[in-house]
Length: 108
Image (cartoon, rainbow, N blue to C red; front, side, top):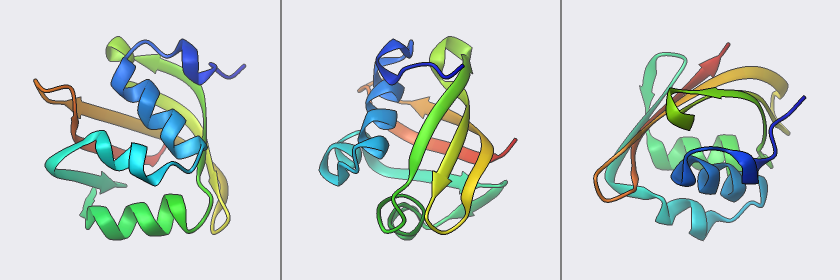
């Protein structure tokens, strides 16, 4: 059974999932630190391009099945209009200012 986003342990990760699911680009971008990076399936990607293609242009949505590492690692069913639904893992690095400095995702 999925974990409701408002029940996720880490407040920054909770806000990330809510921003993805509500297609809130401004809210999403406000969660990222200056110079934030990301990787998909073990490869660093251009953050701005990836966010546009994988989340906002394709109606991305996350359903979290489990969390660990204090809520900074998620197993989720992620779907978008391009690839359909897949099982994924997400790991977030949050800086001292409470912003995401890096996230890594990939198929689980």
